[in-house]
Length: 440
Ligand SMILES: C[S@@+](CC[C@H](N)C(=O)[O-])C[C@H]1O[C@@H](n2cnc3c(N)ncnc32)[C@H](O)[C@@H]1O
Image 1 (tube, rainbow, N blue to C red):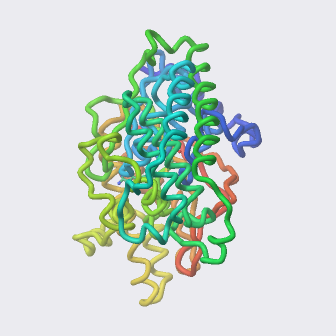
Image 2: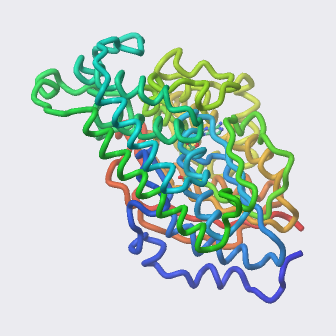
Image 3: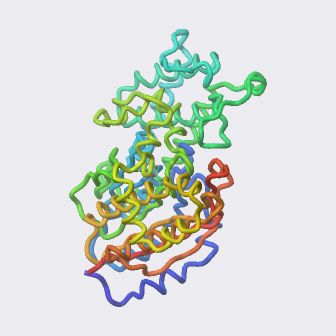
């Protein structure tokens, strides 16, 4: 039942531009920095929206994110004592989310850190623990040696929950110590001359990353304690994160009052290559310590995760997909009319992406209670130098399913690290937060 007293539209529209633009945001808030996953949402922006919407429900609130990424939305909801559920197709996202939605005591973390450091310092072995094609292109020999020492030490940690946190720190260390450039999400090796000039110690990077992660996680756990959401060393409400392809299914039978997400803005290849970004860390993190049941051979190639993500492959019924989208979304139709025949072929990816998104929306709607809310953060982008109005297309897709737009809020995109820019595709510097309500 929804409280009739609150005019949700005007309440949401009263959120100041400063808050929406993230001016009060602190980088380390909500353990956001434990691994710099691409395109993370800003908790301080989501916070007032989640809080205001949840107040319209008199009962306990459950929130889901079907594209959870680094689970910044989920942890924001945990602060308000909600039941949370999230899933993502990227195993690295799952690992980060498992850590961020767990409760750790400072004592257990400090003890584990001490033992681990001693193990690493004692290790004199020279065996390289991981083998994969082109390892020498991506890691110098000294870095491989250090990463192998850290790998062996983490493997000896008896507690899985602690190992997961240590693997996340190793993942961030890999991001910072590999020969991959950190300026883009695509795998792109630094020049040899640059690699030779770099003077880095993967061990030192790991120790400082772990130190900072422990501090950030502890700060977030303290917030949960202060809010009285912790009982017997556990989050009192339900917190579930899973590996899952939201296009195929949402892996829960539960229902939710609120869905808050930021979906991909197009196929990963031409927007954000979450999969390529995760390829090197995932080589060093044992699958059985993330979730042994993941049935995606994600290390087969550097492209595997991106290909399986929304819009990653050509639709098997492309003609049908195209006709359906032209009929349902006047905005897509108009865009394609404006392309010449060569551009149309290049823009087929737009059809593949939105057809996948449309089917995913059907799966999501099934899990939302009547009258429940959906909050989508999304930006427009350019394809073939023409604007793909993602926000309007999403609104048209949802309207065709009886889900109405309540309001939309605009914000500046903070991140300076933009995805690859090329002739084909480019992202905008503004994004919209679209708030919809499911039919009653
Ligand atoms: C913008 S990020 C999500 C950000 C996240 N909501 C947050 O709070 O930081 C988009 C995510 O969608 C995921 N994704 C892409 N295709 C997917 C699919 N078919 N099923 C599940 N997740 C998918 C990507 O792996 C990526 O982590």
